[in-house]
Image 1 (cartoon, each protein chain N blue to C red):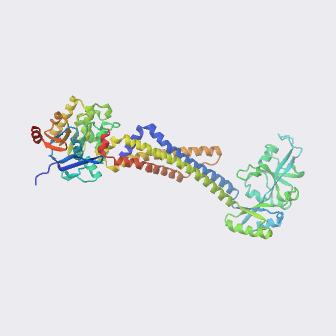
Image 2: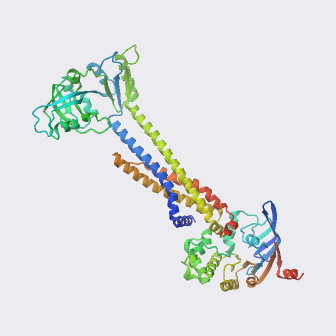
Image 3: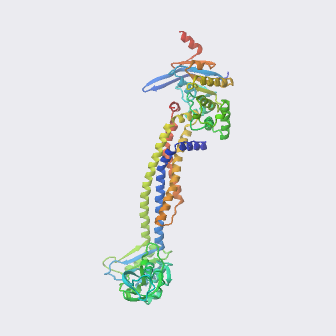
Length: 235
Length: 400
């Protein structure tokens, strides 16, 4: 038996209730990511890409189908167990950074380690080394409001990396940044990929998705590979 | 983890200082009024009981109610009460007003009046000075058993009478007239403190003199002081038996027995009742304070929806979120409670200073109040904290 992919979704369906009416967001989605891959999920708004991201990020569970992450079945488990998986295996990078504004950059980076019950000294050291990695060790004591957008997103990336998660899950990471800063952030992602980090990025931008080594398309809740998508467009 | 949550809660409370303080104020007012009511009430009750028992809680008053059955007790009858088992002594209480005339050679006095109308004269026995007016002699001597036996013309001045009559001059040996009968002053009393301070404003004479020479009639009422190690009820029963033997009547009971212990119990019961009511009102204030906490926590939770979503996304389990917000509510209420205790003690200290009783408090009251404020935090914090813990992280994140 060969090595299982790091992340594997098979036949995932997700339906929301819109008032009385059921609305199927994801249709039989199957998708896998190997360790060290940089994959982009590209789709317009309303395509179901956020729902897919929530499922990959263990913020939500599917109605049917199987999701395996690092050899573990993560569909149909309790909220506490999901929280633990998010803490250990997922590094979130959000469009609007999601930093706590009242605490310093380094405390923001330390936050996931608090929930991992990591001792305070070790937390601090690990957070500082992650800030150094994203080039912000001299801004460690600043609060997010004293940082630029690009710097805030770097802090968020440091926070996502600090637990050494299985995947870095980025949702429109440049969505709130100007073009130049956005490019710098994407270069940071590329260099993280070069180091061997597994990255899954959700975006609506073709340009941003081009930084990824593999692009999958999501349209109306259906997932297509690059080839399938091109073939569909030609039709 | 717990320390971290404490830090988070503390930081959050510190960020909104004004709001935190105002919310706490409800608890501070509630707890401080409970503490103040209870400690003031206890202090006053203790003071009252102390004074009552200083006079001897173990005493029974015997009074003739129906003078047609019996007009008064004779010396022999009084002696029978004195000899009852378990009785320490008896103290007749005869009080009537008489005109007092100071002797004319009183020239050194700062006062010039020499006649005082309507001064209270008390007929007492030697026992009065060992039970009712213990250790209270300023000058001279007390009235002795011989004074009683031989009806001597002697008197002891109460403190206020002495002050009025003689300023601060020692009058022992002087002669005064009580209703035109000469009496020699043999002593002056110190100021009495307590519940029954009638002696301060009186001239004390042997009760036999009061009966024989001052026309005060017979002894109709006296206190029986019971030994400390005698059961009160047994003593009351024996006194009752003797009374009915002395006052057999077909017109029903001709006398009354009043047990001072009963009076003390009644005082305690009444103060407890009043205190209970006040503490109840204070508890309502605390309840309102608790609702204030709940209100603020609900506001906090909805204001911090995005933060809750983020913390959940980063791996905070629901119970950790619950604990974080519960701790915040408990901290708010507990700190308010501690401040309330201090403020309440301050109030009751001030009250004891103003009213003039010894300030004291029970540790158990303080612990109970602090514990109570802790539970207020838990009870009113649990709902908002549960709301936070149950929040869907996706929707919470989206709220930012």
